[in-house]
Amino acid sequence: MKKATEMIRDNIPKDIFTDADLMNIFSGTPDQRYGLMKRAVASEEIIHIRRGLYGLAPKYARHKVSLYELAQHIYGPSYVSLESALSYHGWIPEAVYSVTSASMKKSQDFDTPLGRFCFKRIPSDIFYEGVDRVEGSGGGFFMASPFKALVDYIYIRKKDWADLTPLVESLRIDEDYFEEISEQEIDILKQNYHSRRVQRFLDGMKKELGYER
Figure 1 (cartoon, rainbow, N blue to C red):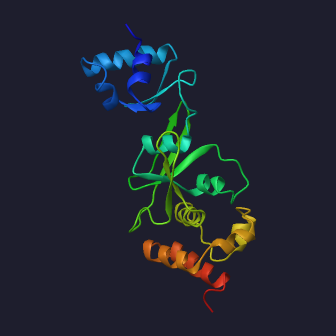
Figure 2 (cartoon, rainbow, N blue to C red; figure 1 turned 30 degrees about the horizontal axis):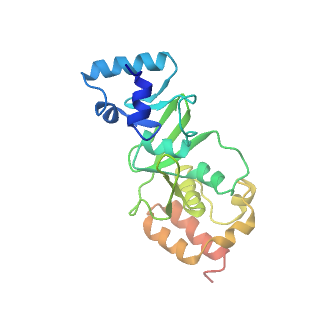
Figure 3 (spheres, rainbow, N blue to C red; figure 1 turned 45 degrees about the vertical axis):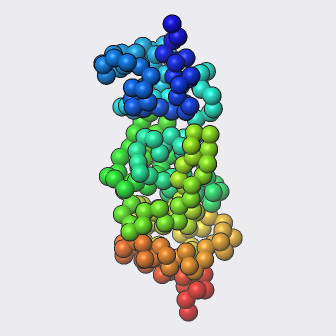
């Protein structure tokens, strides 16, 4: 008889999977499936990421786990943003040791065997405005554009910034990157966020970039 790990590899195309996926290949009660997974976790064949979410251990996985893709499975709807997105795009020089995402739901953090995942609630009219889908081996993930991530950063970290100075001095963003920000992008985000702090920042950016005189 095949081991549980072999059956998972043969029948589930992705290395990250849920209880619902397991129901399709293992008969029995939820308690029996949980016992099966508990033994596989104990033998270090399966990683228990959070309730109802598992992954193949590295020696059995077909691909290296993308933490950005994993974030979408842990808590959603969500997209990678703030420091994680700024680092991904190369806008900030610091290494980021947790994955921070924006979420429609309440803010929540998860400590898992694969790392720490932080989710921050971002209220906006159009949640995915300024967000792109990036394809990956596990199905892809949603990533904020650099400027969208910066606006989320202003909102969540409660920064009263209205010019470029703190962006350069505090975040150490290269001023050349600001040339990538279009007036249209600023205007779209102005319509999407109602926070006075964010509105003040966006107005300041328009002036600093010469779009408003």
